[in-house]
Image (cartoon, rainbow, N blue to C red; front, side, top):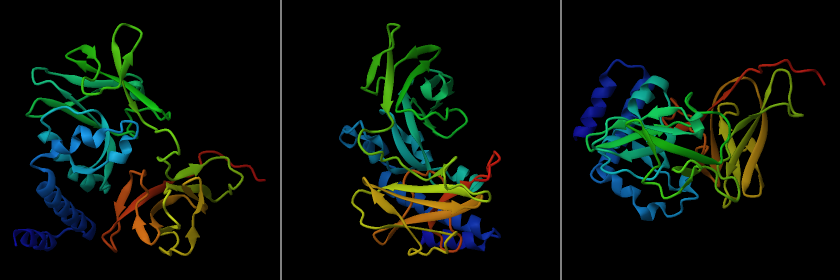
Length: 302
């Protein structure tokens, strides 16, 4: 009853439709997550959930950002998907994806994480009431380099002194008599992290179009189709081809912003490793978000 009254109150507010939808969705998700996980969120980070250290992305779950304040102990780094209401209302992006770093130091004042992903510049962590420092590193942020890394190497700087991550069992000697911690980014075998990308200098380029390659790792799927606002959400127009467990489709698109989803064996899904998402105002559903940029160079006629 209380939840229904809150929704009715939101819709009486003089807000634009998009903000209304975002607020309702955030409220719904926060209630659901709060009921399931608020009491013992850290329990979901048990060692049993994280036995396969080589493939941390397979263990991703969705959490609410305020749950970081409930951490009672540090955990090994891992990829997570999380919802931050302040970012959602500011950017329109509902789901965020990043790497959670934590350090347990109730008696410490300042903790930062420094690694090869930031050219060893240190990124500060925030301390919660339980003495656990934390941050979620966005791989696409301005603090990180764009070079594709297969292994992340890092240390914590604790009150000015460098140390390895005591919660991470994967560490090696750094050559200077101390340890550096590691996190595997890309697992062995098929590249399960594939996602949509813009192709450069391909034989398919045309003056007014960019060439976009849609990709998704789906080894058990029979058919994968692409739907979006560029093809009227028609699942029969763009069918992906399967090769070595990865479905791909090359499509010419004009520069602009697009919403899209994959349809895997009849089920509508997100582009798994495209962290950019938006809310479809007409349906209230979440779609992957793609920006096709203008070409930054002149293309010679062929």
